Amino acid sequence: MEKRVGMEASIAVAEAAGLCDPDAIAAYPITPQTHIVEHLSELVADGVVDAEFVPVESEHSAISVCCGTSAAGARTFTATSSQGLALMHEILFIVPALRLPIVMTVANRTLSGPISIWNDHSDIMAERDIGWVQIFAENGQEALDLTIWAFRLAEDKRVSLPVIVNFDGFILTHMIEPMMMPDREMVQKFLPPFEPLQRLDVDHPITMGPVGIPSIFTETKKAHQEVLTNSLGPIVETLEEFSKHFKRSYKPVETYQADDAEVLLLTMGSLGETAMTAVDMRRKKGDKVGLVRLRLWRPFPFADLVRAIGNVKVLGVIDRAVSVGGPPGPVCSEVKSAFYNRPAQPQIASFVIGLGGRDVPIDDYDAIFDELLAINKGAAVREPVIVGLRE
Image 1 (cartoon, one colour):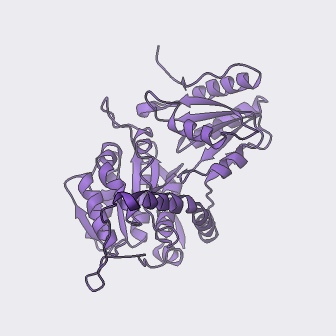
Image 2 (cartoon, one colour; image 1 turned 180 degrees about the vertical axis):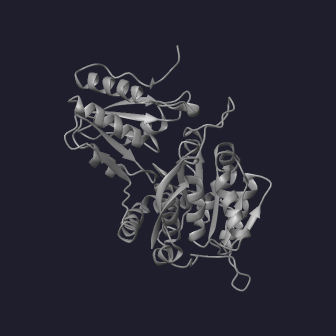
């Protein structure tokens, strides 16, 4: 059964994690993630969730504890943001190398400097290559749902990899929304008991994480690449199972008003809903514009994206992070690689918006669509275009 509730998205994520019956939660508070672990600590203290809650002295310690509990066979959850995610950096690579199915929520927040507690995607883009499955939520309901799904995917023996669920700090984390909250019985029917692929056991000792000497290191990295790439099949399969069970559908790539579009815009995270409003407004003016919403970040859904774009000649890609001194934004760079050497390659324009929590009003989308429509009529592609700069 499900019930309709009005709830802050962070609290909903904590409730969802609790419904998954984690055995261990290790966390350190950092804005704007703090409400998640605070509420989980209350659920544990009140006996609602039967888990070991481990308060630690840093995010580095939090992810290290999670490594230990997951390796011992415990269903494990944590959450962090921004500088906290950066402090975990050293250990984040170790988790998937040990095939530990930890689930982590990242409340996306900009990385310093200058110091900023507000939202953009610079924190997770700095951790692009850590080898975790990474997915983005567009609203509170998605953050709730994807938390439940993440445990199912991570613990699938074909995958056995950690999963990060990203949702935008403050814009989503602190937003009170109406959403559907399942009960524990409904979640348990979707999420089977955790059976580790391997575990540390004094009665059946194994070695985990030994030194990778040169004669085996390349092969282990190739194996990691293959298991993460091949997780796309189980990702699609488990998302379809989620849809059948909870009647809410999620796909790695989704489109809006794209069937007859002449130009498309691509977004990730919470910007998608505002972008849909902008698309509707331009459609009323007669402009054939559409939207592509990229939900799955790793493994990158290359084929799904190419199918979604179809034969559209102009594609704008929005980034909420800057690859300083490098190519356009990291998402745009990835999208361009998806079309490399393909005969029907669209013109791709890069747009950087919403850095450090700056608002992205409808006017900004209008300016982007004006640029894309001009390119469609023969104007040159400028890149990258930083939208919303103050004079």
